[in-house]
Image (cartoon, rainbow, N blue to C red; front, side):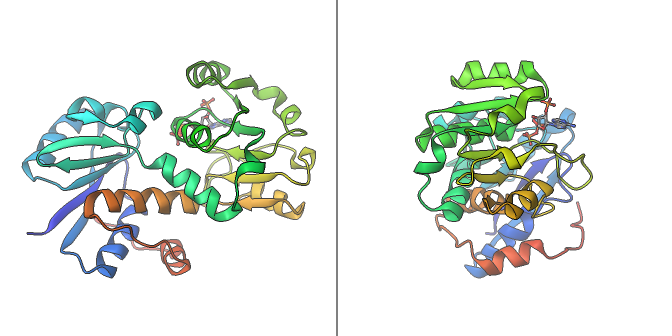
Length: 277
Ligand code: ATR
């Protein structure tokens, strides 16, 4: 019988996940499918019941359900608990287990791009305080980052995260003051994404040895990364985080760790026809 996996979110029609998962399913010649399940918040319960009926092998969960889905699961693993959100569900003998592969995706992408992370983890500055920020903090702490400072437009959210994860925070208005000492600057806001306002930050204030990571991947090279590259700084785009969180989910569902290759990157960046929902 075909192994069913899929993505629950709202909206999901522009998601790259079906393209990534279908690529690996074909590569490994699995009898499996990855479907989109567009689910408005009010219908999450019905969708999760339906998923149990269909005995899906696994699910990805995206905005706005990453926290709300927890009440429809049988248990949640430690990583998902620490991040406070579930992006992957695994069906283990009929039990729905919540996990989170975003931290793995985040740190694997950084390691691939920068190699030894140690020098970059001395003084990390994170812009944003959303869901992606939570996964980034967990991953950075596990990798040994000792000094993390957050700054976010909504100071209250930054403060909440700083208290929860025992990191520093400073007001958004003084974000440029954080740069002179930074070893790694990470944008986890949606600023700079296609259709969103640009991020305003002065990368000329960063030390020459600093690296800049933008988790935005559309466009692949954001204005932030362009200006950092023009300065000769190491840059890390956000596509790898998407690919590696998918890699881990695929492994959890199918028991095979698929490869993230340059060919897959090209494939994912190709414009695709919209998937029917
Ligand atoms: P995700 O789950 O993808 O991280 P999110 O939780 O909606 O998404 O977080 C989006 C982040 O981008 C937040 O840090 C948000 O700042 P606020 O907490 O102040 O909303 C940030 N962001 C979005 N638009 C912004 C803008 N115009 N200026 C500054 N920050 C912005």
